[in-house]
Length: 195
Image 1: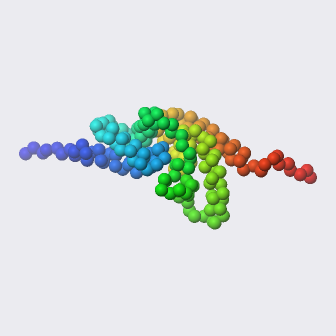
Image 2: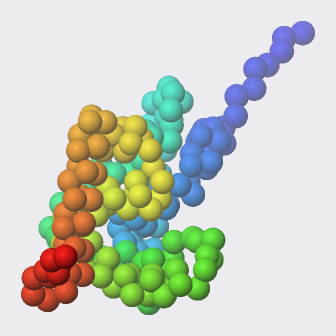
Image 3: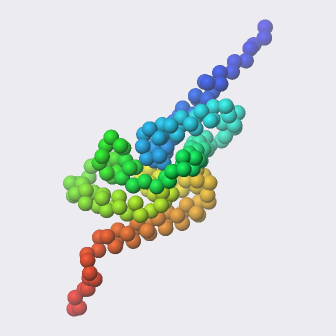
């Protein structure tokens, strides 16, 4: 008696490969696109493109960074195709149905009340400072400093060297710091009294 080998359908194989990564793909797409609708479209486009490439997917060792790279390239291509600039106010990176600033969407441990006061005071300044950065710089800072992506994953997704990620992060933070210092400094020059 011969034993028939059983191989799951292509749909089941695809689902097993991609479904565990859909949540992180959507979060990444939202961060790139800036709103839910565009993020959903972006993930859907990527999934539709990848379905016929089942063998390639099954051959990938580290699927999450590979999928993120594909999604990032799809985003860049879609922005170019539309002919619109990806630059938008930083405040648009929050949820459209929630008008609170983006800092309110970041999970916190609800520290002391003075933290909330500082966040309310500094949040709008940080929004304006982030608007001074290019869309690429904003995305890099948000993915690393807010979403907690490691530099190796960012390098893989952006297809650049880890050293380049480090230098871009450093430059972006330096620009933020400079803008915030200029904005928060009192008008006029401050002189310390001589002792």
